[in-house]
Amino acid sequence: MTNQEQINRRRTFAIISHPDAGKTTLTEKFLLYGGAIQSAGSVKGKASDRHAVSDWMEIEKKRGISITSSVMQFEYDGYCINILDTPGHQDFSEDTYRTLMAADSAVMVIDAAKGIEPQTRKLFKVCAMRDIPIFTFINKMDREARDPFDLLDELETEFGIATYPITWPIGCGLRFKGVYHREHKKIISYADAHRGRERLSSIDCDITDTDTLDRLIGEEERAELVEQVELLDGAGVDFDLEAVRHGKLSPVFFGSALNNFGIETFLECFLRMTTAPLPRKTDGDTVYPSDDRFSAFVFKIQANMNKAHRDRIAFMRICSGRVERGETYYHVQGGRELKLSQPQQMMAQERSVIDEAYAGDIIGVFDPGIFSIGDTVCDRSMRVQFEGIPTFAPEIFVEVEQIDSMKRKQFAKGMNQIAQEGAIRIFCEPGSGLERVYVGVVGELQLDVLESRMKNEYNVEYRKYPQPYQYIKRVPNGVNPADLKLYEVKWVQDFRDGNYLLFPTPWHINYTLEHNEGLTLEEYGSVEE
Ligand code: G4P
Image (cartoon, rainbow, N blue to C red; front, side):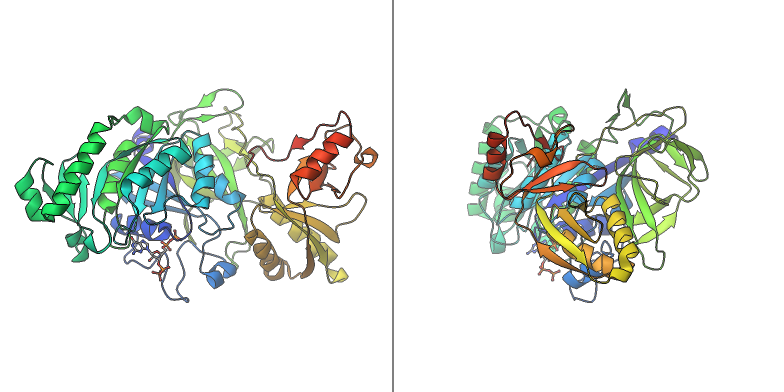
């Protein structure tokens, strides 16, 4: 197969959802259909002692959740699929957002009884910023569900995206009969899924074929289905593949991941409709995946993934060409050559050294501490820099004080390393040392992760004092915060001596601006909430 053929068959997507909507179950079913795992429950076990393939930290096992995003690759129907798992907990972090930067499309899982939930909203926003295709899987149709028109309406009004149901549900809960495939004019029966058949039969059946429909789903359901499908057809939304590929129209599917229902239909349409790896913008030209020269950017750094290895891995998304094991490339931000002697592919915890990978793939590279999030590694002749990965302003702050002064070095090392990974931000009061730092995070859970990692990996314990601040702004260069009139505001510095102010409420921000004439404050992150 040529490089181009390899790239064209790649599909790299992220699954986004609010916790409990069924993301893990759906991921697991994708892997099952792709033959990548042998039995359901391998991704996430029911019992507390079995944990997800995608979980790798102690704390995750304890909580039964997956914090760190991981990557899973499998083959299906000639396609090579990379699924990027995004953390499914309430206290998501910047890591989740960054993972979305590595995807070319997103699958949004929605609980049919609940509709859009807070985390779906946040994640959707990040996908929408990049105009990547978004596919909607409305899950748990085997339970009582909200009216499907209502659900679509909610998506359209809240997200401002048009929807096009490819399948349409026939009933729900105990009366769930299956779906009508609008494109193929077929009924796909739920009963088959219930009988445990992996490959479901579908019955060709036009919506006008009253006899067959009556026989398959009953008279009452048939009448309702016909009415609803006519309403949909009458709504006049045409299926427009270009709109799908630019994130303007979301194809919608109904199913039940737990009962293997709707997975195949979804995969078949999704793989056909979504895009192969997309071009990426750089500081100069756009880089196309078809460019033969290798280029990639770092979207995540993970230390100590495996205790036995005690190493740091930089996750890179390949944007063009092909990476070859043992080849020398160029690390743009580091300004030096870099031999990739052991590029790895991740299947959650499992990793294997690979000989080659292509645009669209995610590889892990051993990081001796040289990479930062957003760095570019590429062919020597390219020397481009991919556009920055968005940063988000921390919203939760705690003051952290080390307990054992004999462990000053470990404390500083741990804090710095974890901050370098991008999981936390650290600040200190002007003139103070590293014994006390202010830690800022996007999600509460990052604090638990920090505490557990400091203890397990650096053997350091600390006291923490929650702070009342929720907003951070940067003080422009040339302004000395000591000269400002501040009220209930904390002045801190990062380790490049940048000055920041922490505010408890928006009122305090306004107060500061009003009482310091001519002062402007800069946003911390590149994405505003
Ligand atoms: P998440 O990753 O989005 O957080 O969701 P996950 O797949 O873990 O699913 C959350 C719960 O919803 C699980 O139940 C799962 O079995 C259930 N679920 C997923 N898909 C469906 C579906 O199509 N129909 C129904 N009825 N349930 C579904 P749990 O009891 O919390 O966990 P478990 O003990 O079953 O693992």
